Length: 293
Image 1 (cartoon, rainbow, N blue to C red):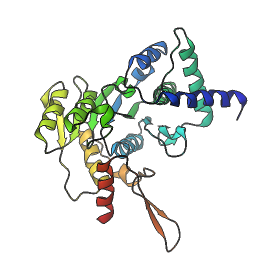
Image 2: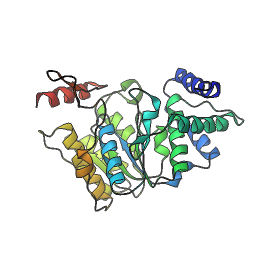
Image 3: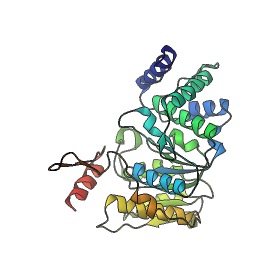
Image 4: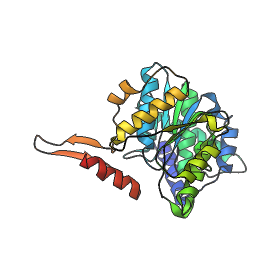
């Protein structure tokens, strides 16, 4: 790695000290300085507490297998930051990431200088890379919340809500209703809003209110015995039909492996490892529930 590359990487790492910031002003300004690359392609925007990465991966693979050049932005990453940014299943290379990051820093240095958060920087790098690569569609996973998440600025023609539970209560609110209000705010005017069904009437009402019209809300009611991946497949297929697309995600789901999410590793002939992760009680419950099936 060259000194120049190391220096720009160090700059990215230095942004971690800011932690999380729920605001859009810096990202709006930086996107404007870059001539709004996020508007050069349509996006499906996904929010929720659990299952976002799985459905994003399935949807991205579906579009790719149907001949559509597709970008995928997710977070966090497991091993390296480049995992967050992929086109047709292939993550951005070290050199591509470096050049996009270098461009971002140039725009940050324009006066008045702007210092984005680490998360905002990775999102902006994705927008630069996707736009310059000429993608035809993007699948975008929110980082935290939705209303003030940087990804809220993408040009979305469909929005998706996975399961929502209590999480990050110090930031998003202490009740499920407060949290769903933040997450369902990703809804766009005139675009379908596809959501996992919830038995909580107040939560359903808030999700419906978030859409520009109640007729744009599509509910997916999973079977109580469904596995996590099967639930994601059902939700993904409803997304596609809500967009009036003839494709389904069934074939793509067969070849989709989302690392760290119910991933089976045959360590040896005698030892098989099931790898999963969760960041909230609901996710832990679903993981143990899945293992018991």
